Each structure stands twice: as C-alpha cells, then as structure tokens.
Amino acid sequence: MKPLILLLMLLAATWSGMACAAPYVPADDRQVLERLPEKADPSLRLLRRMRSALAADPRNLELAAALARSAIEASRATGDPRYLGMAQAALAPWWNDPHADAPALLLRATIRQSLHDFDGALVDLDRVIERTGDGQALLTRATILAVQGRYDAARADCARLARRTSALVVATCDAGPASLAGDADAYRRLAALLARSGDAASVRAWSLTLAGEIAARAGYDAAAEAHFAAARALDPQDAYLKGAYADFLLDCGRPRDVLPLVDHDVRNDALLLRLALAERAVAGLESSYAEHAAELAARFDAARRRGDVVHRREEARYRLAIAGDPAGALALAKANWAVQREPADLRVLADAARATQDASAQKIVDDWLSSNALHDAHLALARSAP
Image (cartoon, rainbow, N blue to C red; front, top):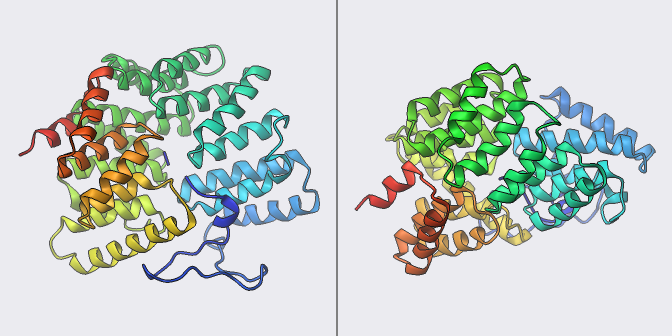
C-alpha cells in the first residue's frame, strides 16, 4: 500500500536535490514553492476550480467530498502525496469530529489508510459500517485488515459485500486475503470470473492487477504477464499497477523491460526505485543509475526529516540493493512489518534477514509462511539461492 506524514506539511514539501541540504522553511505562508502540473492535465485544473468553490463555502460537505475524492484519485494516479494534503484540507471542518457524517468519515478513513494510520482508519470505518452498512466502507475495511494480515476478518467483510455489488468485486475482495491464507483455489475463482464478467474497466483493471500478483506468487509467470498486460491496456497510468508489474519483471530477470514501463514516472518515489533497480542491472546505464540513486537518497533523507514513515518498505529495498546497508535495511523492514504485512513487506524482511544472517528476523518470516500456508515462488527461489 502505498502514503505519509502530517498532510498539511506535505503541501509545503519540495523534492530535495541534495541529500544533506537543510530543510527550507518559507518566510511567508503565501510564498509559492512549486506549482502542481495543472497545465498538462485537465483534471488537475478542475481540482483548482473545485478548491476555489470550496473556499467560498468551506462547510459545504458535498463540495468538500467531491474535492477530496478527486484529490485522492489524483494522488493515486500520480503518486504525488501533496494531493492527499489537498484532500485532508478539504475535510478540515470534519477532520477531528467523531460524529461527522458518513461521507466525511469514509473519506477520512481513506486518507488515513493512505497515511498508514490503519487503526485510525478502522475506527472511522467501523462507525460508518455500524451506521449504514456501506459497501465501500466494507471493501476498504477488508483491504486494511488484509494488509494487517487479519485474513479471516477481511474475508468476512468481503462476504458481506455479496448482495451489494458485482460478483467480480466480491471475488477480487476475497481473492487477496484468501490467496495469502493458503487457499489454492482463490486464483482459479478470480480468473474464471474475469473471463466472463462485464464490469467497468476500472474494476477489471483492479481485478486483473490482483490476478497478476497472485499468479506471480504461484509461479504462473505467463498468466501473470497476461493479466498485467490486460490491466495496463485498461489503465496504463495506474502507479500501483506499474510497480507490481515492474517487480514481476525484475523477479523474472528482465530489467530492460522495466525501463519503458517506469522511466516517465520519476516523481513517484516507488517507481523511481524500480527504475534505479532496473538501471543497476542493465549495462551502459551507469550514469542515469547514479543520478537516480542519489535522488532516492535525497528523497528518503527528506522523508526522515519530515517524520514520514510510510515509505519504509521502499527505503529498506533501497538500502539493501542500492545503498549497501543491510543492517539499515533490516531495521526498516522490521519497523515496516510491525505496521503492514503484505507479501512485498515479507519479501524485503526476508531479503534483509538473509543479508544480515539475522536469526530472529528469519524466524518471523518462517513462522508467517508456516502459519498462513503462504507460497511465493519468487520468495522461495530467493531464499534457496546460495
């Protein structure tokens, strides 16, 4: 999962070009630090107009919710966390109100989820579900529970969606936690529904991406690639999909194929990491690799200065594979594992444990694999390497 620190701070954040530069604090709150790329994207220009409308009527929940939803979508599409700051700012009148209306609570939970404040998000979602039984709240809660490794509870929420949405949405919701809890049929059920569903492109792209991830873990590389390609045909700009596909290509020893996938996404930290990892493995790209490695170092340094703990998984991968700091990678991987427990989190913890020969971390990995009957073909291959 992808989010970040106190979001009002993110609105004023700039990408630092120097790893050891002191933080810049504007002398005037009106000073413009950087303009978001509105000219190149009509949807971002719409956000600006929506902000102006909300400024004139800041307690209009309908306007605030529309702006927050659009800003959250912009953050998802671009990987730029400043749009999450925009979303939180839109909800300012309701941000600390435990009795806020359900639409505000649901959006607040979505932002908190992006910040990895999973417990805070679950409190809001519990309130919404208790009041309304809202399907989107159930789906969001199931997603968070799965990220925390609470697979039975996640699947229970997915089952409650059965009369509220399409069979493909229900199957996709369930396939993630089911596949991570040793249900070997989860992929088959999802693939069968994908073959015949007529759901919207956005739903199919989400389902195809998950199918690709499950197939990759199972070692069905041809199927995984087909799913990722089909998802990209429906939503070629989705940042999460690009990251998942890039990781698959890296695992398959195809770093050159990663380059065209992510080389226009250097503003996105997670995708910049994948680009650097690919460049590191391709001869003749030493200069661009060094540039991107230095940029990652600067960004992670800036994140630490802000108190941002959301990208610990990405920084652990950076420290292990690029910075040559396995001990630092292990510390980050352990801290990250305490918050979220997705396969990618287990993978970086396992890699760091192996690099440092840390028995306690290795036991965490072994116990998790055993207790959940989890099979990950690429993780197994990495662990068996000399």
